[in-house]
Length: 416
Image (cartoon, rainbow, N blue to C red; front, side, top):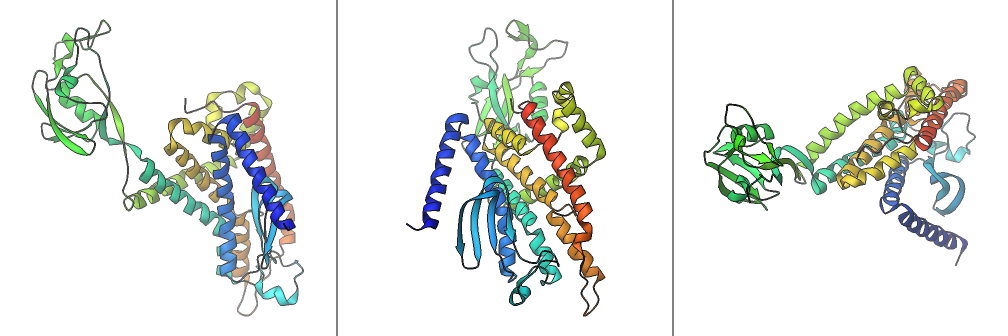
């Protein structure tokens, strides 16, 4: 067995052992979430990789993670591999700056030699992949998991009336999980309409159409005056006016979109989330947010305040914890969290500051605007070094603050 294959065997074995230990220690949710984050990272880098390849650029490295190399192999002109720290990834294309020394025969395949549209597409491709992954997650959630719908009202529970073996709904043959389609020919599109119809028909037989296992059934129920009823010794209703009750507790039913119907719904969901995430990113980089984070870091009482916790940004540790906790409410909530993370990371990468992808788009755009026919303008990125270092410091401080808070003062589980 050659060195590359032996390295791959060791890497795969290590991954299997790590997944097994994580499952034993924290349950299945943690390795699943970590895997989803790694897929997200790989998707981002694949976006850069495939657009570079399609543009004819030279790709020398495609790595997931940073630090020491755990496994690597070279296929053609590209080296693929995994590094020890799974904190991101990178695709290396020569010529990201004009100061890079490139062999003359390779100059035509460098980033700096590419046309403006190809530069922008290559730099933006990672964030575009996050958008694609967010759309896929939203579509999968709507199609396979479904979401509660306020317009699909179902029976979530029955109320036991004192002195009655069955309440009015049970006598009529209504069952848990039934969807109330209509009452006396009036379509039930929300819980308020159903409650009002029942309350206003005390002692009158109602024709109730329910949907059970995809089949509509017609049942007949007569609401009982709540003033005559007691639950655990307490009257259900008081007053001079009769109020009808069937003895049911309502819930929003889970609705699955069709494969095609989920497409526009997914787009709408992602677009609305993009707007919220954009506002969140602006808030994260505001002086007030940094002041708030510093106050929480230096004041444990402030860091434990539920209101402050709900409004603060999270590190990767906090994101993983929230995603794991979300599995308590089912796969749909997890998919929603992962969708939001993809959108947030995609937008964050497009902030027009180096070393983020948006910074390269800004530089390429500036060069294009300054260029004249036959005389391309070359921006000296070295002159931006102080700004790059300043912004990198801001990112580092933000990372350090959020990481400390997520470890020392974790956000209370919002799904309990």
